[in-house]
Image (cartoon, rainbow, N blue to C red; front, top):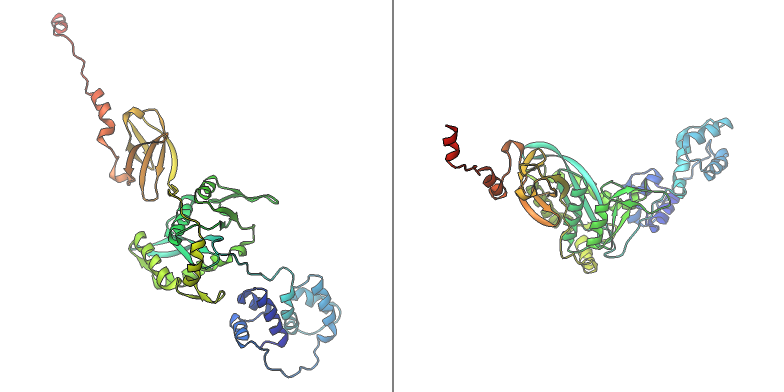
Length: 391
């Protein structure tokens, strides 16, 4: 049962924006105990006054150690035993527990943002049944910090290209762009975090930010709680969506179910922190979002290749034709997440293919090699007199 002192700590921390689970951790009780105390909004009934305990003569010493930053109960116990204390650890921990809330740097104050200011991005992973096969899948979660509306997209990779695609899909789902995007320190976005300096972002991530008009932001190293809203959504999706849905026909089916679940379950939910339905709060935030750009950012993989003498390119274990006039030239290959292959000579699109498995064979467009065939079929014509002389 909570003491009056515990309840006073709960009230103080709640006013400072500390989460219920963090308050419970500080007091060493279950979060439901804290929630009931907040709902009751009053101190618990007075308890019978305890008699003296073995710890009483040593409480001043305990307080001194706490003031010096010593919070480990076992370390404090050893100090007290050296001075003659022969009591147990339980009574010592009970004395320390309500004081932990005052420990410097331990309480996490909730950080609220204005409408349209920030979107937070994070990745999660799950094992699921896809197309009759048990696989590991990844999902990117992007949440608007103000309204708590979120969107997630499932895929087979968490590399840079899929990260950018997931971010764009979320902006499109929300119908606009936030002023800034807060990411963790994955290399797809943040290349380096230097002490006392701004983080060095991935060049393509900076390009994405420039086109969509958001400021890139990164969490401080080992300070991921600054992105806590989004990290909680990873757990929410695992405990709700992936409990309700466990088998999927394919990626399209999976993401269709995800968007349906978002609209039916996640958007209308009542959010305890903001005391409002998420979709209602979003309806106020949406007009503050910046418009989407006129053109969509190209999230395709980019590679350079040299055209072989037979006018083919080697791409992921297969060969794809290009115009014969490009033999020996270096071209840029774009491999889309939709499995399209586009080949550019500088800024000119010169070939379009569908990515295909190696067992299907080479991908050839006859028109690409028409010139080569004409040159190959040329037969040298010699006058008949040359043959007569040979006889």
